Amino acid sequence: MKRSLLMISALAVSASLYTLVGVAAAKGGAQAEIKALEESYVAAVDAKDVDKIMECYAPGDRLFVFDVIPPRQYAGADAYHKNWADLFAGLKGPVKIELSDLSVASSGDLAYGHVIQHFTATGNDGKPVDFTFRTTDVYRKIKGKWLIVQEHNSVPVDVATGKADMQSKP
Image (cartoon, rainbow, N blue to C red; front, side, top):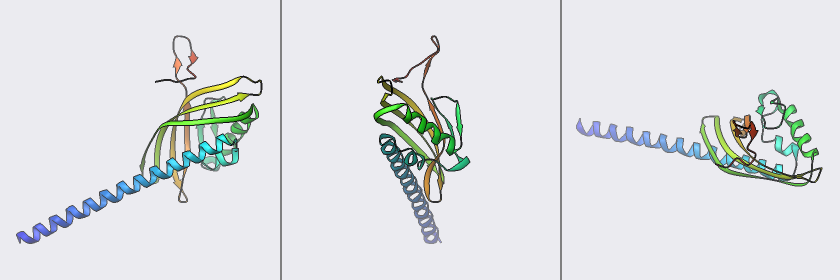
């Protein structure tokens, strides 16, 4: 009897460990896939390729974005596609976006993350464009692929002056 209880306990512990390892591996896989998605986003922005950028986002009405560029919000992929096209139309030459401090957590087919983005370019007027902003994303695995379904970009604001902190240093 004692031996049977010991065997059952050992099996239960083994099953629990197997489950924990499987969940950790799944989360690690999600994080690696989302990191790859973010790397694709960077390459697409650097290439000024709006269609490739939009491949990182959910299609149709599944996408909702709060952006630092007016208007306040974009509902749907078409609206956000236009935002990117308008942004690039106002810039000449290359653009560069760099990500830092990416952090992602996932559970099942949902994940969320936050990252700091540093964007540099040259405006059509020849003036440099250089700002740093914060991004919080909600990801959903759709048809086997992680996509951004909700995004919130922001910059800190100095409450005393009402001015945005475009460099967003910690």
